[in-house]
Length: 131
Image (cartoon, rainbow, N blue to C red; front, side, top):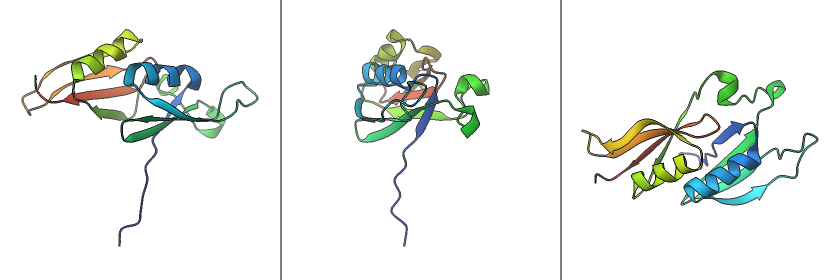
């Protein structure tokens, strides 16, 4: 029997509150939990929900091994979001500080997709139906 598993990706960033605001504005995410600020003024975790997915953001804490993409020299993980309108999603991300890495366009494998780096260094594949 397969165990019941829930996966909650946690993105490590310098400023969880700023990241939460970006994901709310750019992806339409809803903040569902924010831990009280620690000694450094940052919450240890902020939980967000976008559509049926949830994810968390936490501050970089090198002594815990929690390193941001900036600490690592780039993102070690690709996050993929599937949306009805990838162009609109990509535009919202760039309008709020994201950077296009690969243009969103029709791909030969039958999807419209591209890549956007968020202001915190995380790399997102934005994909959806052909246009």
